[in-house]
Image 1 (tube, rainbow, N blue to C red):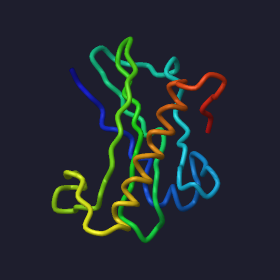
Image 2 (image 1 turned 180 degrees about the horizontal axis):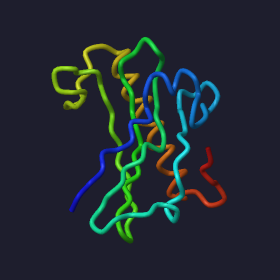
Image 3 (image 1 turned 180 degrees about the vertical axis):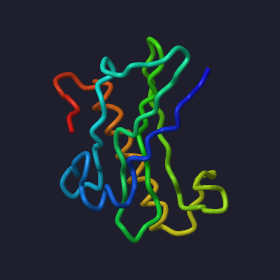
Length: 131
């Protein structure tokens, strides 16, 4: 099975300028414009990843989370990634907080991703996710 790399929509430039999506007020959540699942033309065995939402605490903090949609033939799934700022591990690590501020930042990002996931998957009746 081949896989395309996820589109790196969560660039600092895009987030800072609000391109290809929108900020949800002061919440620190950026919703990315992505094609509807039915508009994605997959080749046999292909998997496509789209960043749906990005959560940041504030510009001075290195904790950032993404909700990523994975689309394959007949299947749509989601995954959450949180970068806790451990550059020596390419941003991926066991969650370790050495200060109350870092713990609060990780909790905020995780909660934002949970909120977005529930919105996108229709967990709550009558609530529709939109960009």
